[in-house]
Amino acid sequence: MGVFFEVVLPIISIFVIGFVVQKWRKLDVKTASTLTIYVFIPFLVFQAFYDKEFSGDFSMIVMFCFILLFSIILLDKILAKILKWDRGEESGIILSTAFMNAGNYGAPVVLFALGQEAFTYAVIFFSIQAIIMNIFGVYYASRGGYEIRYAFYSVLKMPATYAIILAFSLNGLNVQLGGPVIEMIDFMAAVGLPLMMVVLGMQLANIEFKEFEISKVAIGSAIKLLAMPLVAWLFVWLLPVSPLIGKVIIILSAMPTAATTTMFALEFKARPDLVSSVTMVTTLLSVVTNSVLLAILV
Image 1 (cartoon, rainbow, N blue to C red):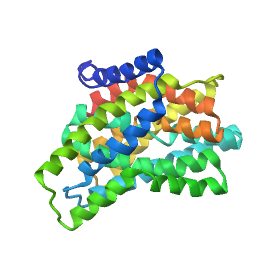
Image 2: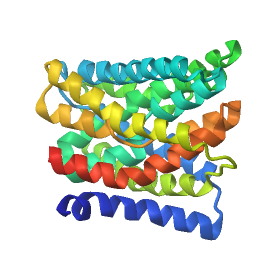
Image 3: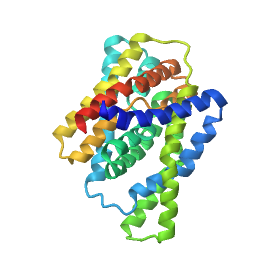
Image 4: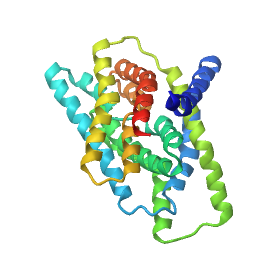
């Protein structure tokens, strides 16, 4: 219970604040989300990538992002064949299970549970995950020719992409920024994390679904909250990854469905009710599953 009160409850409380404020005031979530993505997250990402010696850590994190993605997509496709899902159902399940909420939810959990160094790895993970989700998430939501070009274009529109490039460039050239600049970056980055958490609560408050397919929601939730962390644990055990990065990857893999996938599903009509249902259910159930996982790992 100590892990729940020290790590999970404070984080859930911030989500609840965003949820309650949105239900009460009906704010423009898109504006709040855009402000977070285009203003504050780039500073948080730059802070994580700048002036850090990565050695093999970065490539290992990137590799795990793709391992988790393709492992779950393969599992989903096998289940789609066995259960005779149509293409829309398969796409909905992939959107619900292959992309975790590593930013708004996972990064705060890692910070509270494992500390600042682990949080830096979590920011790197969710930065790579965001790029992957904007490509593969849009692809599976649309399954069309034009939209895959739109997916790559959406990555190029993300300021965090350029924050990564800039941070890597300055790091590689050994350029040291002045004290006032670093202080400004740290100040802006500090706003990013709590704002991301509040925005997630607001996004959850706006989720609507007319149909609740119990069997598919149960399968999607089990894949997201149980299968993905088991896959992560297996590869952490098999591959030469440091204990701290291994814990970060397992924790992030156990996060609920990314709320962004609901927006993809709505935009491209890829079973939005199913995706919304799994997003809400996994977020609620993660209070229990995360508490158990953290009790084991921490």
